[in-house]
Length: 505
Ligand code: AHR
Image (cartoon, rainbow, N blue to C red):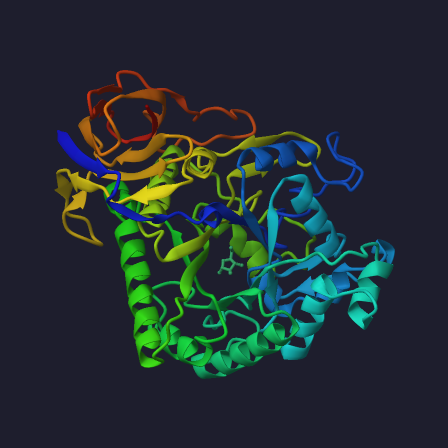
């Protein structure tokens, strides 16, 4: 089976916003407690933050981490998480039927961001709370001393404003499961008034308004139209979420799911343009895809806690999906879609980062390790910076439930002009046949050579990296990929993921 690709230097999608490789941490299960924070762990720092986890996070070079939710944020009082720890209240978390000691709050989170070289993207509670708490929170985080909230922050140990630039106006407000769920008109009005108020404090904040929780919502895409008609002039991004599953255990259908993601992005991009046209606006609102991942492996196990049959446990094992090799291929295809739509998707957050549907797992008191999906996320985040190329792809395909003629080759390409490299991320979605890949590199000069080729492949689609077998799935060096003149050639084994880097002269 052959696939022919053309990459031209001038045929581009967009300069990729680095924030495409962001992540998400929620007060949920063990994401925070025994995830990033575990005082007493052998690797913990003076703040109780796990050093082993911090290193795995740092290696991912994550630009932003969204916090503290998620569904959790819609009943969260940010004030509970500031001030002396011993005085912080333990609260019931209504989203996940657990309790939270509030030992970690906004100070600890932002300090942790500093230690792992990332930046915070904070979410505001617009479910159980409203405009006044929103402005208080933003003033507490960013306001000057000499004012009520700035002075309180100083008293709590931080005189300098945190200067957080990126704020989410609530979470999944279209979802009936959300505390404080609203209609599009109710939410649109509240989000607009909140955005106006926050801008009165600081014009330059970047604000994200809630779009649909997923594209199967009955209110989608009308939700986007109505919410944007209320907020177009006051926000910068509209947030989308999507989770993928292979409950049907049908791998070809599962691996075609990014066609649905692509359609979702396209529809919302059109809705943005519609509202822009209607408003005669010259401003471009873009997409913050601030929750995406595979999520289904743990669904059944989680029911006991979510149904309230375990009381209100603190930091139980929840949403601890054990990812398998098949999920590597899926995550590779999802990230490729974001790169190909990077003209409109400016921010994307893998959901989540540690323990909860995450690329990193930990054992309390024990090790932290990389799940299978760590690898495609790592390769894209580290090497996927630059300009997304608009590749011409000619590959055989197959008919799937979600779309016809789904290309066996899923590929994206990124040109880094400064480093003089082109990096390709490719997935062969064929289970039986290898793909003979050729990429014609046009306009990049004559000499080029392959400087790295990493492959993630395994004969067992369902194998996962577990506590006992942490490296069952890991990248290996690829062989046989080469550039001759302007032609890059290589062979992609059945069901395999690839990162291929080409150095230009
Ligand atoms: O990431 C898990 C949950 O998924 C989030 O809390 C919520 O926003 C979404 O439904």
